[in-house]
Length: 411
Image 1 (tube, helix red, strand yellow):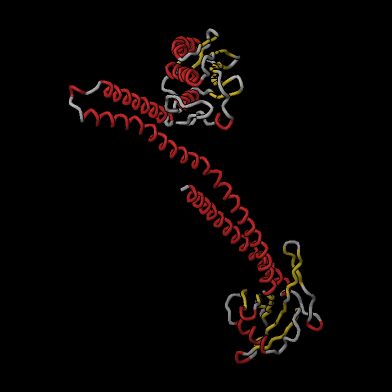
Image 2: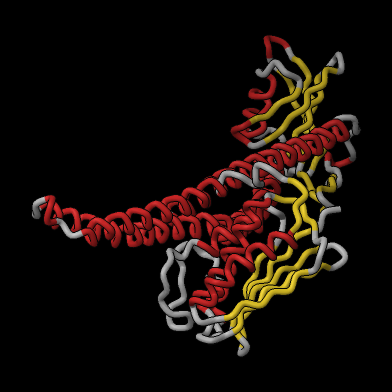
């Protein structure tokens, strides 16, 4: 899918680039052709006004195109009408030699005189002409168009090479941009597949337990059914309910940039309440909880969601802290921010795993051990931090692991 998306992106980009380059080349060709034709007409108008010199020859006349001087071969003819529709023609000047009284000249003049416009081309001989009626006779000037065509071919050849180089360069850029622009899509697609796989795995275990216990219960008379099987069904059903609720929380967060209710709340009170609630939990887990919170730390946010964030961090510390260790919660404030830190002693988490702690369903194995839970808590905490325009990051070292949550103070 991602490969097809990249190919489509490159194809669309290059189609647009090709259309633009074609339009530019066409415009350049039309402009160059018009300029060269105008210069040829200037030569025609210049030479048709000149009188013949002894010997019927004149110097070559040049025009400048793009800084280069282009020499255009030309010749002029005076045509005198005769009786019975005949005429007499005399070459009066130009750079051509040996045209006088030739069949070639006769054919050129017949083609020119048979055309109504006073200015045009003699295609069979590659000449551009200008005809002027002087009363008693007609004066004609001819310029060779082969030089125009050669100049156009040479210049357009250069422009086409430049256009082809630009096309190849933009093709490379499009490939790079396709990889860059589709990288978030690829990550999202990969995360979606991983999410479905992990969610299916998490739901499989409680469903298996429920089905197994239900099958056993159905095979035993009601009065003989053990209560523990019913308890198993209830416990696993509640576990599935919690999982679905957490998944719904994350799904809603994907469509909501901020919590619905933002008000002034005391983060000091929230941190203190959460610490008191988790003291017995930590004691039962064989650990102790110490907390220090500055007074009057007010922030703008949703009190219930901030309380959930602090609870998630404390629950994580209790689960993965070292046996007999001391869990600490600290709340302090700077000039602009409130800073809440939850730390627990234990084996350090490798750097490559730290960046993944906030991924959905991710649970480090070797460094943190397999504990109960779904691996969604820290993901929910990160979403809550983002909703409150705060940051949540994890740090780990020899002394243990700590999570640092910062958010702006109430102004």
